[in-house]
Length: 225
Image (cartoon, rainbow, N blue to C red):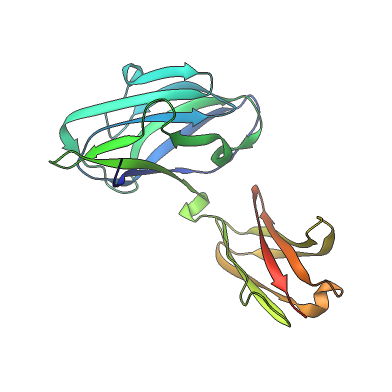
């Protein structure tokens, strides 16, 4: 079994429209002394048109089509290859067959060909990880509210890839909306404070959902009497 992450690649998340041709740049987050790697790429709702190597030699010869939404890849180099963090490793072009977010469609798996990288002079086996970046390199993240459980007020911290309108919705476990807040969020760290008066007497397990642009995440919180 791979003992550690040998290679970390990242790609900028985006929304795709049906029929759109989408060019995706895979960037090095960790790519040091890599002698080879292999993986299965799952791309649901996306048809692969081409793969071009940038920092590494990667051509159609290194790629095998398994099905319309699965592709295997295998690459090796006589000398260990190091790619500077933030540099483009390879570029892929897809045609989106449905409208969706890239992060829901694109994954590195071991389904057909095991995802492994061979690193360093000892050819140590490591895993391969694909990370999604928001625009400007920031992820979209929603933290657990603090404190939790809470009685009088609580704070929700969240990170936005870019500035934009944020919709915060409080729901009960049946999905009934208790309260909605609209605000302008800044790129980076933000926070929202919820007080008991805002909840119209609701308590117990509630759900809070944060939405901004194409991003959406929800978590549970516990309001106590």
